[in-house]
Image (cartoon, rainbow, N blue to C red):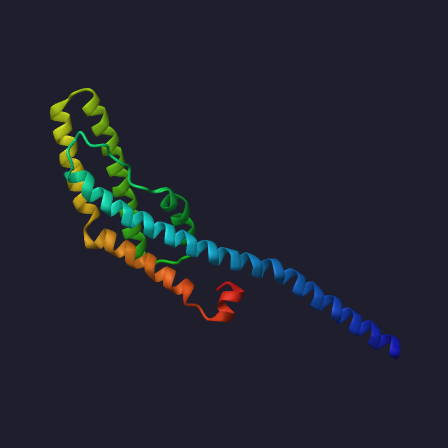
Length: 171
């Protein structure tokens, strides 16, 4: 009878050890992804704020001034992951995607402006500057930049204001 209890307790110990051993990588992955998500959202907010400032300046400054592309590197890498994790509502996803497309359009127009300036095409420069101004105005619309920033701040707030046990588990 003693051998039966020793074998049963040993088996239970092995099962518990296997479960704990399997959960450790899962919990660690969840924790690291939660930290990564917070960093990505902070980076996206910084890019969004910087892009709005640069779009406003680039649209009104003289054509001879150097132009800067709107930053989109974090948006390009983090947005698909955040959408896949279902962090945003459908309206927020639409606003973030529209913002990304407008910023890419703005960057393409900046490249076209540089080409037109180099070739001394004054009609082309005027048309491209007009497009840049319209795109910059569309970037500043509350439904695009405002909703994008609100969505990112909501996700960031949710990830930073989780209860301790949820942070430890990675939810």
